[in-house]
Amino acid sequence: MARERAPQPSHPAEPGLLARTFGRLLTGLFWLWMALVLSVLLEWTGMILWWPEAGLDHSRVLLEAEIGYLNEDFKESLLVSSPARMARALAADFHRVFFEWTGLADFLQRLAGPAASGEGRITTGMRALYARVADFLLAAMTITEVFAVRLAVLVLAMPVFVLFALVGLADGLMRRDLRRWGGGREHGFLYHHAKRPVVPSVVAAWVVYLGLPVSLHPTTVVVPFAALFGGLLALTSATFKKYL
Image (cartoon, rainbow, N blue to C red):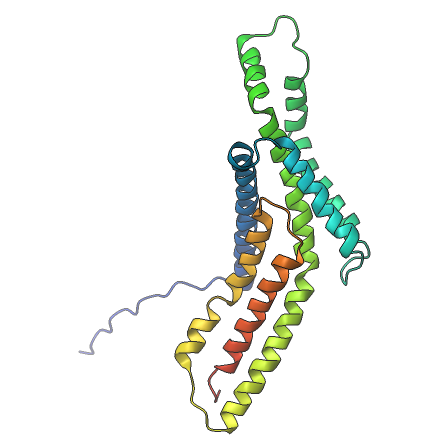
């Protein structure tokens, strides 16, 4: 009798290109949402601990400063003709989606208005609660617009990351060829450890800049992370194995 072959373990089918793209998109949206929540929480913490005197005005000054950077130093871009106009439009879209379409802005406006006769206890209690947290809610609305402006800045700054990536790859591949033709040793350990933080270095730039509770010029955040990204690519490509 012929031996019965043991059934081969079935491997789960790998997700297709569309599924992987959709998953990465959801992951990106999740991190953007977390950055927005972080920025609002930091602003609220600052209103209590760090700048209680400024209060609500701190978020408004922050928004004016971020738009001022665009008006003064980012008048032109490779992607759009007017970066400041794009940032303002994105901030308006964020406000419309998060507060107008959801009806939250109208609801808060009614709570802030004069009390009507015959209101129930629930409405009266909500008015009293709103009076205590009004500054925090309005600050969250302003910080959402700040988040949108910074998001526009990061999108417009992506050519900087591409430029540093090209320089890093060119330098790394040149060093790899010199090592290959000069009989240099391979550094697999260094390669595997250098390639891991390549993508996180870009993600960190977005999370850090979007969550900053203070106003900093975009170049002070974008350029260091772009240089780190290019340096990691240079190191990764330089230590790649000599023979494919």
